[in-house]
Structure formats: C-alpha cells, structure tokens
Length: 535
Length: 94
Image 1 (cartoon, rainbow over the protein chains, first blue to last red):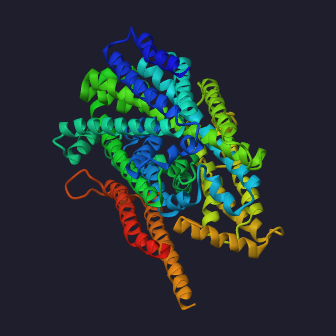
Image 2 (cartoon, chains in turn blue, orange; image 1 turned 60 degrees about the vertical axis):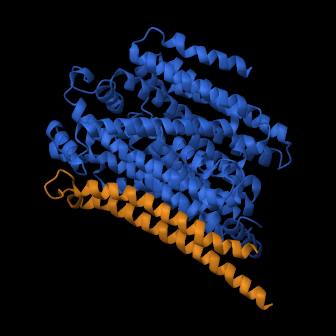
Image 3 (tube, rainbow over the protein chains, first blue to last red; image 1 turned 120 degrees about the horizontal axis):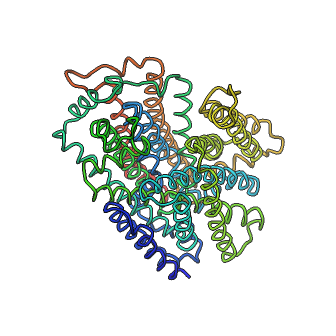
C-alpha cells in the first residue's frame, strides 16, 4: 500500500506541474524531492510505529537539538513566514510587535512547562493533569480542548495552503488542499511521531536556510547597513517615517494586552507543541530543546523583519510585482515570495515556493498527530475503555483518527475557501490560553485544585472564549453582517483567561467532593515527580 | 533520624530553588513584554525617537532587544538548570 502511494507521489508533481514556467518547474522539482525524502522516512518509520512509544513519542529518542529544530518546524507556519513579512511590508514596525508576541511564549514554556511536562507525562498533556485528577472527566476536557484548538488551527492552515499553492504553482485550490491533506494523512497514520518529527526537522532547516539567504541577499544590496535599508524604505513607502513607529495596527491598549495574553499563554497550551516534549529522553534535553526552539524562532523573526523592510524597498515601485491599482500581486502575504524573485531570480523563487509548500505540510502533520492521540489515547483508552485497552487496538484507533481528522481538514479547507479564516489562528490561541494552559498550570502549581474545579472551570473558559469571539467584531460583524458587535473586543483573552482561572479556583475552593488530605498528598507526590523525574 | 531530616531539608531547598528560578525568570519576561505592549498602547512616542543620526528608532532597538533577551534568558536558565540544579538533583538521587 505505502510503496504504491510512494510511487504515485514521486510522479505526481511532475505531471501536475509539467506545463508551467521555469521557476515553477524548479519549485516542483525541489518539492518532489522533499516529498520523496519524507515518504522514504515514513516508509522506514512505519515499521516501528506498531509500538505506542514510537507512534506517539518517537520512542523518546529525539535529541534536544533535534527536538528544538522540530519544535521550530512545528511552530513556524507559512502564516508566520509570509504573514509577518507581509505585515512588515504593509505597516513596518507594527509587524515586529506580532513577532515578539509569537516569540515570548517560548521562554514561558521553558521556565514553567517543558521539564515538568516531560517528567510527568508520557504521550499527551492530559497524562499530566490526570495524575492527580479523576481520569475520565479530565481526559474528556483535555481532548475537547485539544480537538477544538487543532481543528481551528488546521482550517486556517488548509485554507492558507490552498490559496498559496494556487498562486505559487497555478494548481486549482481543491487539488492543492487534497495534496496537502493526503500527504499529511500518510505521514501521520503510517509514520506517527517519527515521520512527523523528521518532516518538521527537514522543513525547519529548509525554512531557516531559505529565509537566511533571502535576508542576506537583501542586506548585501545595502552593504549590510540596517540604517540604509530603513532610510530607503522611508523614502519609498507612502506612510514615510510612520512605518518606523508604532502605528494604527494597535490603536487601543486593551486589545493589545488581550492579544498579548492570548499569544504568551496560548503558546504554552498548544497541544501539538506540548506533545513534542515527550519525544526527548529526559528533562535535561526537554530544556535544551526549548532553548534551541526559542533561538531558532527568535532568529527567524528577526529575519522576517529584514525581509519585510527589504520588500518595501524592492517591491513598492516595481511594476513587475504590482497590479493596476498599485497593490502587491496576490496579496501582501506574497511579499517574501516576490522579494525572493526580485533579489534571487527565477531559481531562488522556485526554491522559496517549494519551502513554503513544505512548511505547510510540517505544521498540519503535527496538528493531526496531536488530534489523533487525543482521540486514540485520551478518549478511547481512558474514557471508553477505562484504561484497559490493548496496544494494538489503541494504535488502530489513533491511526484511523488521523485519517478521519485529515479528511475533516480537507473538507473544511474546501468549505471555507471563500472565507477570511485568519481569525481562526487567533481563536485557537485564545482557546489554548483559556482552557489548556490554566488546567495544566494549576495542576502543576496549585495544591487545592480539584477535578470538578478543573473540569467545570476549564469548560467555562472554553465556552466563554468561543462565545465572545462569535459575539465579537470578527464573526458577528465581518461574517454575520450585523452592524454592531455585542462584545466589543476582537481578542477576548484578557477576559477569558481571567474567567477561566477564577472559575477553576472558585469551584475548587467550594468543591464538596474534595478530600483535602488526599488531594494534598497527591499534589506532593506530583511535585516530587515533576522535579526529580521519579516517584 | 538526623540523616532523614537533612535529606528532607535538601529536598525542600531543591524545590525552592527550582521554583525561584522558574518564577523569577517568568516574571522578567512577562514584565518586559507587557511593559512593551503598555508603552505601545499608552505612550507610543517613547518608541518613536531616532537613535543618533540614523533611521533606527528606539522602538526597533527595544523590539529586537526583547527577542535577543528572550534567547539569552532561556540560555541562562538552561545552563543553571542543567549544571547547578541537576547536580543538586543527582545528590538527592543518591
């Protein structure tokens, strides 16, 4: 079966991309090579993925450095590469504010989460919360939190992938979504975490290399002086000096803080990110992987800043990249792609396009695996089978779940084609910040947490987040077409994180089911395991 | 008996140091980031002056510094944890 698919995909890009121009042909070649190598890895990984340690956690054999790269590959989506450089192209300094928001969650993960997670859990973050709380309730909530987060994130990725590939390779939208969907199903269902990890590592290397070369080519044109780039950009941009100042993008402070809260705590609650810390052998390498991840992601965001300003200088007045109204061809998100053509020619354009394609695959695979393990492990084994399922059945359920999630993602990706789905990433972060993070954080740090507190409090956090986003400007006004939003803020995290934490705490304090003595005993046991890595 | 008390003290001290390191480093990052956001929200002028004769603004310098500081803080944390605290942990394991 897999060798047939393997063969099919090696040939597939050639006949689809055959009658395109030179850069597309080169892009197809690079991309085919990426698919070839990753399917080869999947083939070897599939022989090992009949053991659950391998399927969920790559046998815990990934080194800290490798995992750091894989995390970076999991986190740096096409949206952050193209989106943030596009944002800098459009509004200058304001783009940097977003990059910083996406980065600062990382030190927090290292300081508060990573090593404790590794010491306490095995395959999913619900392993950690269920150490001291009642299995079935807390697994249900964690699974719901995981699935909501990853589905929202997946929709945003799929729709982005479809339109990006449509522009880059001239493929029809639906075919693009199917290619991404089918490849991710193959990686995840056959190769599990081993294949997913290597897809992410290879993608991270390609992306960091591509972005470095792009930034280098830009800097070279200005004799490596940031000052010269900025002055040229100010001269050419219609907002002149304003592009160097904080501007319109963040006009009201409450929204800015709210977005900040969603980004910083949401990152620490993303299930596909948390899952990566189980792939290393011990707490020591968990820390090392968080350090390398922070370094790669931070370096990458500095590059996008340079790339964005480079795009202002090279693209703003170049008719080759503009439409009749003077806007960038495609959208502002195409800034980095056009820039690669402008400074590096057809060949480099092809390379960067292929990298963007590969980037999407790595992110969606990580998401799908996190969703599959929430179904196969948290729901099937611990909720339905009460902890007594055999390994073969469990893996079968997980593998079929990954296929199911893949098809749901393809379907929703096609369904939402015409919609603006950018808000879904924001919503995914808000859900992670107001459901997954509070439960995980309080499990590790607060001795009086009870099962009811975590369950009902977390549920309240989840429901308020979704309700406030639906009633807010992005859905109520922009999508439903009402005149005025019922809830005024675009980003609700400032309220929802607070509501979630306070309901968990209040319900725990007034919980009648709570056996205090027992609870504290369990908490002390958890603390010992969290820091020493043993019982 | 005496040995046991010593061991418990050692353990408590180890947990305390771990928590101190985690929470103080988290506080630094949260303080840096939210001050940055609050300045953007309430006093954007502070981030809008030029450094010397160049086009580099205070906002760009501070923004890029937060990225670099995040990397440096994670490095320092990792080194302290992986050398000093891990040594304490190994002693407890004995």
